[in-house]
Every structure is written in structure tokens, then in C-alpha cells.
Amino acid sequence: MKKQILILASALVGLGLLPAHAQFGPPGGGHGPTFGGATGKLFGEHQSFSATLEIQTTDPSGNGVTMPGRISLAAGKSRFEINLADVKGSKMPPNAMAHMKTMGMDRMVTISRPDKKASYLIYPGMQSYVENRATEADTAAPGDFKVEMTEIGKETVDGHPCVKNKVVVTDKENKKHESTVWNATDLKNFPIKIQTQEQGGNATMLFKDISFDKPGDTTFEIPSGYTKYDNMQTMMQTEMMKKMGGGGFER
Image (cartoon, rainbow, N blue to C red; front, side, top):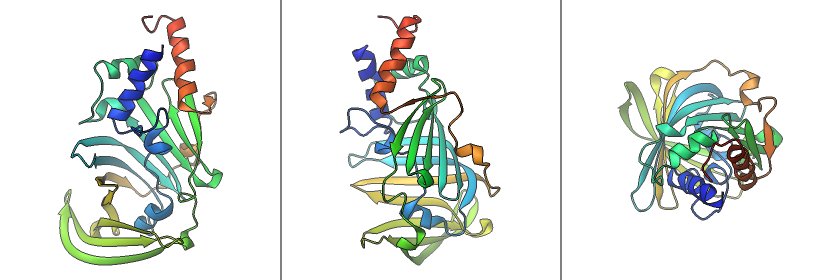
């Protein structure tokens, strides 16, 4: 069983969903893409929407991963859904995706709830989830940030005329978060493309099929009947034992 857990953990590292320095943990060290804190300020008046979201990341060595999914946002709450089979450019171990499908880990949902000071990593295929504490940055009040925007050009992105802006968000500790943002003038200046650099790597978010209808409250709730786990390791061990008991894995 330990070997199976290591294969799945290695798969998540290869997909860029599990930090390489952590033995176990949810995407990004506790989060999928979240839109609270400094990131939330990039959306201006657009605090409720849903869209297709493609995330492209490149590490300092130049290795890239593309993750397509679906994002919903409302009043600081966010939800990101992804099918890991759609991820491109990952360094997955051989047969890792087959193991993930068998486990029910190929589909994943991350929900951020700053109002509850928590984030959730949900696996619908296992009807299970891991709850994590939200970071202080994600639960900061909007007034804790100062935004400076400077126009640096005009470009067309995915057919939308955009103003390209350099945006610097400064938090209450005077830490600056710099991004390049393409605001679509035909979509009420919605930031359809956001590019950031951090720790030597690059990350780009590209939004498509945008709807400004407010997502329903149930979008950001844990489905009833799902099993809660305190950490990723316990969830993987427990769910794998269930699969082994039912003949889902070869011993």
C-alpha cells in the first residue's frame, strides 16, 4: 500500500498540484487557485462570475504544466474544478493516472471559504475531502490593500480588445505583489489574462466563456455525505484500504 501512496503522491507533484518539498498536502500547499487577498484586487468590480480557466505554470528550470478547469467566484468564495486527465506537460510516473482513476482521484475540486477561514480539497470520485486552514493573506480585508495600475499597451487576447496593465498590489505589511493584467474592454474591463512571476517561475491564468451571473450558494458547499479527513495522507491510506479490500488494487 505504501508503494501505491508514493505513486499517487509523485503524480500530484508531477502535475504541479503537490509541493515537491512536502510529503503530503493539497494543491499549492493548501489551495487551488484562490481569489482572496491580493489576487482578488485584480478583479475590481467583478467579484461574482464563472468561467473556463486555463492555468499555465513554468518552474525556474523551464518545465511547464497546463491545467484547464472551471472557476466560480462570489463574494470572496471560490471554486475550481479540474479533471487531471486534461493536464498537459506534467511529469507523471508511469501508470500514475490509471492508479488515480482507480482511486477516484482523477477529478478534483478546490473550494476556498475565507468566511470560514478554511479551504477544501474535494475528490468526488471518493466522496471525500480534506479541510485546511486558510492563510492570513487569503482572509485579509479588502481595505488592507493598495492598488496601483499603469497602462503599458493595448493587445488583443482570444479575440477581445484589451488594455495591458502593470498592476502592483501592496498589502498592509508593505509587501508588493506585481502582475501583468489584460483587461478586456468589451467585457467591462474583466481581467481575462493575468500573468505573475514568483520564486523564479511564471504563472498565467486565461479566462474564457465568462458569465457574470452570480453562482449559487451551493456551489461553495461540501456535498452532503462526503467523508472529512484532516490530512491528505490519512485520506489516501484509508481510501486505498477500501479499494484493496474490494479488489480495486493488486496487492
